[in-house]
Image (cartoon, rainbow, N blue to C red; front, side):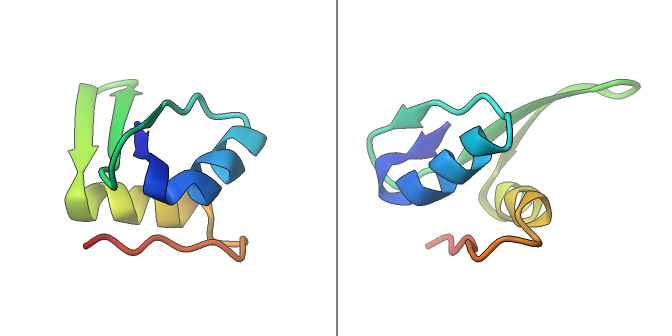
Length: 65
């Protein structure tokens, strides 16, 4: 889930084939099902690092306030 204020990031992730839900606000929450460790929710700095790693070669970047 990505807040509407980060819509450009959401669109780039969708373009790369990820399922993204846009919600009101600025919050970023990522839900991942890792193969061996199971389901995990990423927020704040963890979510920022995960998205940044996905967009390394992109002109987009994440700033979390």
